[in-house]
Image 1 (tube, rainbow, N blue to C red):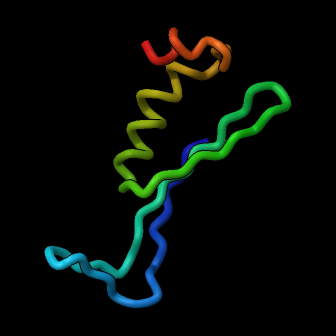
Image 2: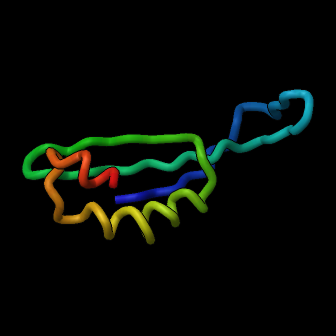
Length: 72
């Protein structure tokens, strides 16, 4: 399951070139048998769409132990 979140920051943040008041977060929950894994990254909603539309169809139903083939 892929989800995208936009989390408000406690206060405005800036790095000298850009200022923001929210942080974008994408999570992925993967299941393989009885094992469940959770991963996350700071990324915009577009990354969640890429994962859902492109990568999930490639890995769904595949063996999690065949990493070289899945990467290929």
